[in-house]
Image (cartoon, rainbow, N blue to C red; front, side):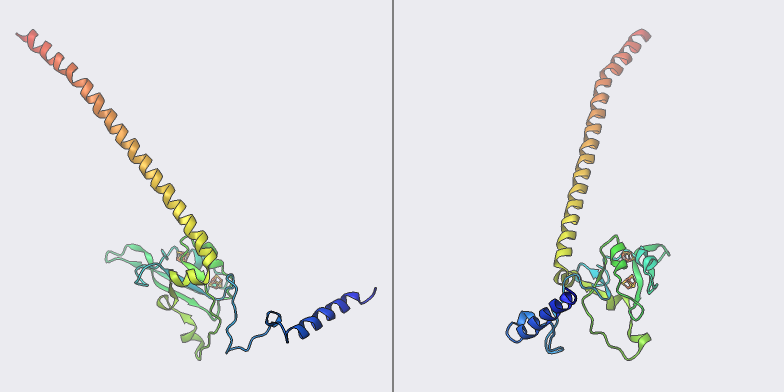
Length: 212
Ligand code: SF4
Ligand code: SF4
C-alpha cells in the first residue's frame, strides 16, 4: 500500500520517543558536557605516537621511516630523522609534527605504519585560539604511552601483541636452528681434522725413515 514505509518509520520514531521516557537505553542524546559520550573502540579522530617505556622520547616506537608522511593525503605530517654526531641517520624522529587543523582523520597513517607506532586517538574536544601555534602538534605532544593505547583500543592491542609474540617465537626458533646448524658444522669439521691427523703423522714418519 502506498505510504506504508512512511507509517512504519513514524511508528518506530513514536515508539522511541515514548520509550525514551521509561528506558534509558532508548535515549540517543546526552546531557553533554556533564555526561561523557560512550565512544566505540574503532572511533578515530587525530593520530598520536606510541611509546613503550618510561621515557616518551627514547622509547618511541617510531623508526622515522616516513611512510606515513608519504601516504598522508593532505600532507599534514612532517618528519625529520635524528642524526648521530657523525651525521649518520638514526632510526628515530628528531621532528615529528602533525597539523591537526589539516588532518582529516582518515587513519591511513596508522594503517601503513610498519611499527605500530602511530595510532588514532579518541579525543575530540580540541579548541585553540591560534590555528598555527596551537593546532600544529609536535613529537612530545603527540607521544602517548602504550598503556593509553591499550586502554582505548583493547581489541587491536591484543591482536597486535599476539602477532608480536608469534613473530618473536618464530625468530627465536630460527635463531636456535641456525645456532644448532653452526654447532653441527663445527663438530663435523673438528671430526674431519681429527681423522686426518694420524695419516699426516704416518706420512711424516715414512719420510723420516726414507731419509735415514
Ligand atoms: S589521519 Fe589521515 S590526514 Fe590525518 S595525519 Fe593520518 S594520514 Fe594524514
Ligand atoms: S609513525 Fe610509523 S610510518 Fe610514520 S615514520 Fe614512524 S615508523 Fe614510519
